[in-house]
Structure formats: structure tokens, C-alpha cells
Length: 110
Length: 116
View 1: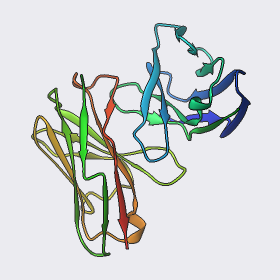
View 2 (view 1 turned 30 degrees about the horizontal axis):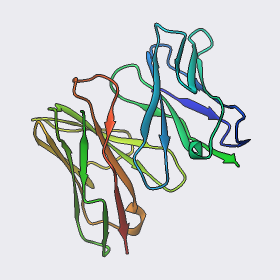
View 3 (view 1 turned 120 degrees about the vertical axis):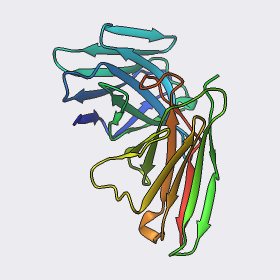
View 4 (view 1 turned 60 degrees about the vertical axis):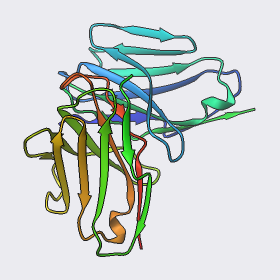
């Protein structure tokens, strides 16, 4: 099955700086890569996703890049704000099932 | 659109009891729903795929007799944790998509289960 590794496990950044989270996947057939933000005790919220026919996608302060050859994808958050503090999960899918990374706890220092 | 509702949001019960959790797609029909379990400070682990009108497909290591799944209609899947014990305490989350076997998945609010 699919194995998704996510780094770092924790990330502390100064408000206004950028944050980068990286994930690798094992199954070359995976074709869908979402990123979720989860606040304590709440549901995961989809913040951005990318499909394998695209190399990069951007939505305001958030961007995702995908390198299919190397089987890794990254989340970039620019101009971080305190409300960006949360746990972020990457995931990969080659059909309808999602395999999640271990998560990254992001703390934005004011 | 694409709202998934989960009930209850929080349940506390004694060891040995059975607990039923409901997952509903409010504005779309879902032939497939997914059940996840999330322990504190851990990731989401897929437990099973719920298929309307047929048996659920369980992931390796998940006891099908322990976690009963019923998907009797196109908008409702239920997860019953039978004879629950403290180690079953966790955050259970369901997800579904308006398009069968398609992404993205939409998650319910989750159910916090605490077994005393």
C-alpha cells in the first residue's frame, strides 16, 4: 500500500515568515495529493490539493508543488499569521482511498 | 455544498457497552463513505470503506466484528463499536464524496469517544 512520510513533525516560525512542509510517497500510481489543516478537536479541512498532471498550484498565501519523478510534494505558506497555527497533514491517493502523513504541528510566533 | 454530518460529537460510556456513530451526507448521495480513527497527536488511520448496500471493506488489522459498519442508504453510514474498552477511546471521523470513488473527500466533524 501507499506510504506517506511527512517532515518536519514540528515547525515554529515567526509571524510573516514562510513555512514549508515536505512529504514523500511510495506508490508511483498515486495521482491526487491533498493538504489538510486540523485544529484541535476539529475535522481536517482541505486547504489545497494537486493532481498528478500539474506541477504547482497556488491559492493566495498557500502553494503546493509536486515532483512526480522524485515522488515528493511540498506545502508552502507565505506571510504566516497566528491563525495559521495548526496541525497540517499531507495525503496521497491512487484511487479513492487516502493515505495520510504523520502531520506537522505549525506554530506561528507573534 | 458537500456537507457531511456526524453524530454524536462526543460520547462517554462505560467499558463493555456498544456505541453507534452516525455519518450522514446532507446534500448529496454517497455510495461510498470512509471511517477513520485518530488517536491523540497522531494521524488519521483509515479503518474501513463503507459501501452502500454491501459489506464494508476493512483495512488490515481492523477487527470487523469489533467495528460494525452499516451503510443502508445513500446518505447514512453507521459505525458501531461493540463491547467498547478504554483502548477504543479515540476520535472517529467519517468522510464521503459526491462523486463515487472520487476526490476530494469531505469530512464530518468527528466523534470523540471516551470509554471509562
